Length: 224
Image (tube, rainbow, N blue to C red; front, side):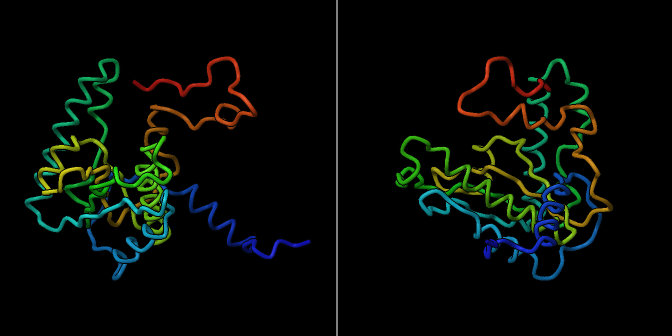
C-alpha cells in the first residue's frame, strides 16, 4: 500500500542534496541578502521543534557597525585563548579563518531566553534540551540560507558572559551562536576542516549501534 504522506522522489532527492551541500561559511563577498530573506530565516527557525514547546530561541539582529567591531574583538580574544589550549595544533589553528564578521552582509546572535528554569516539561532530567531545541532552529535557518544560495557561518568562539553583557541581555539569557550571513563566491565541495585534515566524516558503523554500546573504542579521532 502506498504511503500517502511520502514526498515525491524528486523532493526527497532535493532535500538530501541540500543537507549534503550545507556548509559552515567563513568567506563572504560583498552584496546584500535577497530582499525579504531575513524574516523568512526567522520564520524557518520558528518552525523548529522545541521540547515542551518552550521555543527557547531569541535572535538579535546586529546592525550597529561599532557593536559588530566590539564583537569582533571578543571573538579574537577567545581565539587566542583557544589557541593556547591547543598546544599540539596551535599554529594550525591560528591559520584558520574562524569567522566572517568583517565582511558578511548580516550578523545575528542567537541566545537562549532567560527564565528557562521554569520550563520542566522535557527538561527535568535533561536541562540541556533548550540548547538542543535552539540548535534545531539554527539548522532550519542554515538549510534555507543554503537553498537560497546564501552562506551562513556559526561562530561559537566567544565568552558567553562577555557577549551577553555587551548586548545587554537580561540575567539568565545566554548567547550560543553568532551567525554570519552573506553572499559567497562558492560553496566548498567538502567541509573546510575535513579538507584541511582536522577530521573526517565518520562511517555509520562508528556511530550506529544496536541494543548496547559495543566493546572497543568508537570515539571520534582527536583533533586537539
